[in-house]
Length: 298
Image (tube, helix red, strand yellow):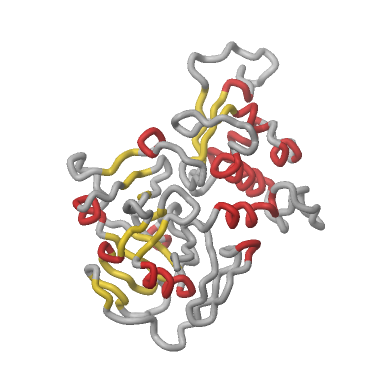
């Protein structure tokens, strides 16, 4: 049984979760496409993520080698077009997104000035990409900064956040798996330390990873523009428990579960492993209780 990790379930699970903000039913008091009272900026951000991470091919939008898409084509995609998103809104979402999920740049060579546009630019002048989180296959070296021992850029600390409900399956499968995405997502710190990308704020367990040891064994690592640490794991898409430097509770003291690649203990009795809201298909996971095997997403 593969670990139902929140860093990426099957692509279908990603898309099922995202149906509520693109192409779904009208919600009372919300924008068409669902949203459950979410702000317009959040709806736009989620729709962009859905397209640029997962749906570009199905939408007939070509991503270049670095994962960029033409912004005018992005704005013409049905769920985004239905929101009537403007260039100004896209710029604001890219600039203000807390986790810096997107990068936007002018095409080169520069497009001619558009006299009808306030700053002389139009959507057709821009390219946009998601910085990480893809299920669409993109060459890592074109999109990301390679982390290597010889480059001297190995982060001093690397963490992966997960949940009590997923932990038994992680141990059973022998580590973390990429699942439906291209990479396992990690961070350089915890939310308490001000890190906003790479670990969810409600993560219950923190896995510290020995990146240096994994690099020595041939595992590749990358860093995205927004500071998320990423790895494809080994040939089977698995980042082995051998590289678990330390596993502890984040807000609940569960002791030390693993240290230096060795299992020390199980989760204490009485710890309830409830699959977090929004981490399973259409927000529901299978199981829960004392370590259910629901599917999740990053």
